[in-house]
Image (tube, rainbow, N blue to C red; front, side, top):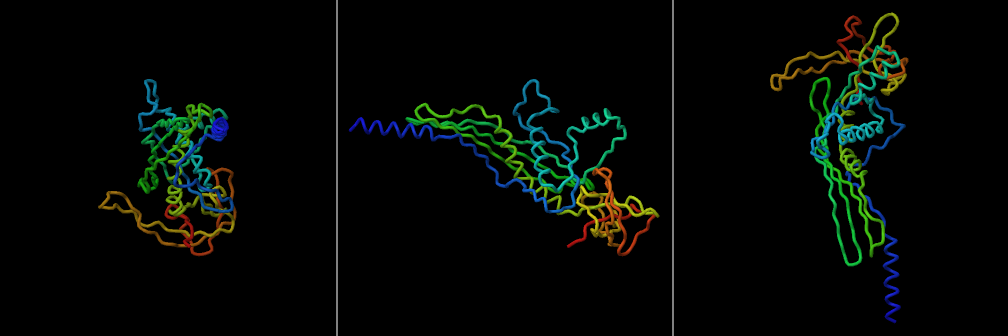
Length: 312
């Protein structure tokens, strides 16, 4: 009878050994942005100006701050998440020199430089890895945990003002358990770094999107003559034929004595235009041909006006 009980006990332990699995956990309070292809939005131009690694992680004797792997990880992950939202025209800044070199190789010397509406400046402020183990009579558990902290600032290029700033933390963990020496053992998991940074950035992306999209989309007049009225922006920004937009005469620019910054007083609506045709094949050369359905402007002073969405 005792032998039978021992056999059953070891059988159950053996089954438990083979039931252990590697567990990977990533903590993130905000889910990644879900792309809705049917949604049409007026896209803002965004560039990631700088992302740095302010921690001491991976900073050895041969460390090169211009080629920091943690900072590059953060830029790539953030760019992917913003692109997945389908709400921005992302402009390259980190590797812009490589783009210029490629254009020169192709014989294109007339490189166009496009300005962004918003700049993202960020840094990895915390980064660390730790191992935790738990040993019992018949089992052993080992966990690897990576924690990352990320700080982001969103700057309105037109004013230089920081319109959003926040810090978030993310954590990624992998756990293995063995029973009586059997089961999968834990090796160094390099992917946890990506997952921890991604978890931290996921908490910030939605707020970045909301802060950009809450501010009005703007366009400007290119020409106003016998050949037609052209404005900047086209299909890639979400402009389509039949759209209606308000035309605003800019308000007076004055210096705010409290902040020392120049500020533009509210403008006034002077007309309404309809999009008749969209042209161009890249964000740099896209345009729209429009016509006035209400009001008008001084065709000799196009810089006094801008076009924006009709407030709903």
